[in-house]
Length: 192
Image (cartoon, rainbow, N blue to C red; front, side, top):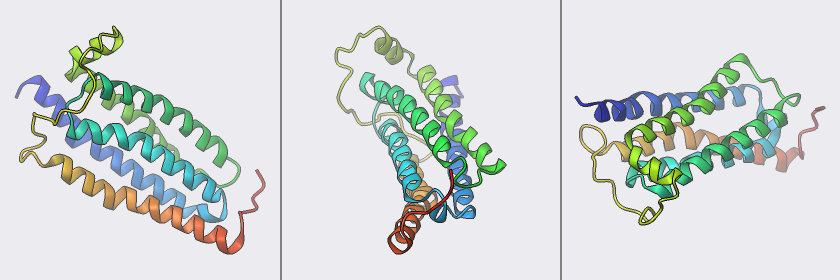
């Protein structure tokens, strides 16, 4: 197995699943602290925003060839996600308990995108050089991924469906709990 394939397998079968597991743990912590009664709908919206910030470059990287445009989107999303994640913890602190499990989940949720981007850079070094040297000619647009992902080539579909079921759906349920609670009881009154 060559190094490029080994790096791809680490991305697909180690880091991306770990990211999903960290997301599930984070959601479970929110549920246990009754987010709907504490930091409420506002924090649920912040979680949705962070999910979208990461989802867009992730999906694009799975189904299209990584070019300058996708590399720029990955960089922008990583920076934006870190800013919003910092705001999220700042907002929630004092409104609800942030357990040690949630802190560990946040550690993974913050660092895994960085490591994923580093490994994408390793695999797409020429694209990275074009990105940072502003050699952007022809680096925009979408081209379907030529290299198959996984043994059958269906990894992208499997991963997106799995993440939809085990991560996106629970966070949608979290948003719905917060929305329903706020509609029935008003905004949570928690001293911050």
